[in-house]
Length: 199
Picture 1 (cartoon, helix red, strand yellow):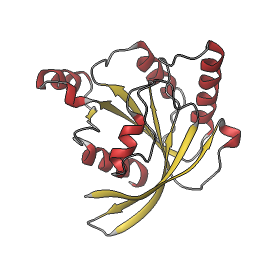
Picture 2 (cartoon, rainbow, N blue to C red; picture 1 turned 90 degrees about the horizontal axis):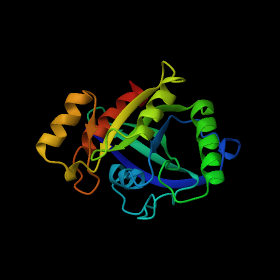
Picture 3 (spheres, rainbow, N blue to C red; picture 1 turned 90 degrees about the vertical axis):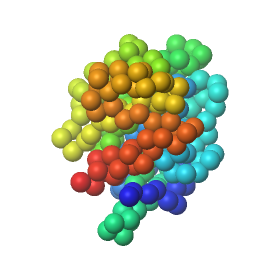
Picture 4 (cartoon, rainbow, N blue to C red; picture 1 turned 120 degrees about the vertical axis):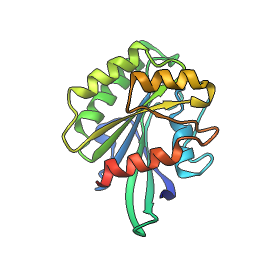
């Protein structure tokens, strides 16, 4: 069993040049605005309010960093990592100029951040075929390194019936279905992140 403890907010940055180098493996959380990035970080870390979630799409406009400690209960080993909550895309009610700046910052960050080991692409399980998500998948495929892994996380899975979940699994055999509200799929996701970082 993998657990995550001692999670803390570290800092926020507006672009890659402002981002500190922590010298630790990083997990980048990506997805459309309102897909549930902050809620998922809180569920993984078992801390309500660690990452600020909002009902207003596009509220996260900064790159937010959180420290987290993974514990492998079987081996009784501890490992430090950094969670990176990135600005959402595609839905925010902000000017095109700001959206373009976000995209530029995001591209620079994803390509230039050398310590990222896992990209968590969060997809709303109720809307799993949106062009924005397909574009992001194609974009990441252009620069993914051999030592990096992309995990596709389908959020808000509690809103689906069994047939809906089966359709996603049939379409994407590596799909990880989670619900931050119901805490389902969270333990599986912890294991997957841990393996991506340290195996």
